[in-house]
Amino acid sequence: MLAPGDIAAIRRDPALRANLRRSLDRMLAFYGLAWDGDRASIRLAPFFALRAAAWIGHGNHNFRRITRILRSLVLAGEREAAQALFKVLRELHAGPYGRVIGAQALDFWKRATAGEPG
Image 1 (cartoon, rainbow, N blue to C red):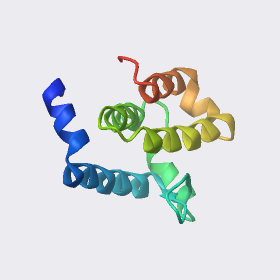
Image 2: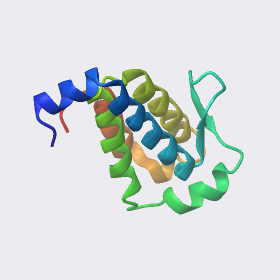
Image 3: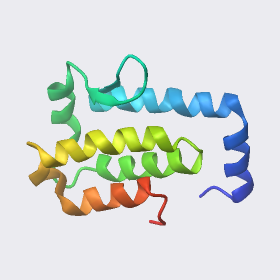
């Protein structure tokens, strides 16, 4: 868990924020997601179905990892990125993956994006 001083340091250090964004980009690729051209929204990448088979499943630890990613983004001052990720996750839940993702995971993601304690 990050101390308040650590959170403040991340928020004010451009290099740390850039590293966080690079880490997010790597995880998005793992999940088969990608930023649009102007980094305003996150969409399904062309290889999404292939990647989804590796991480969207009952009891998969990646749902918890996504909660931590969302929470970290919010704490680091990258709320817009957290909201963009949550939006595409909400769309996946509303679509063909809703039965697997489930209401509980969606609620955790919603609370993490809102900055609520977990």
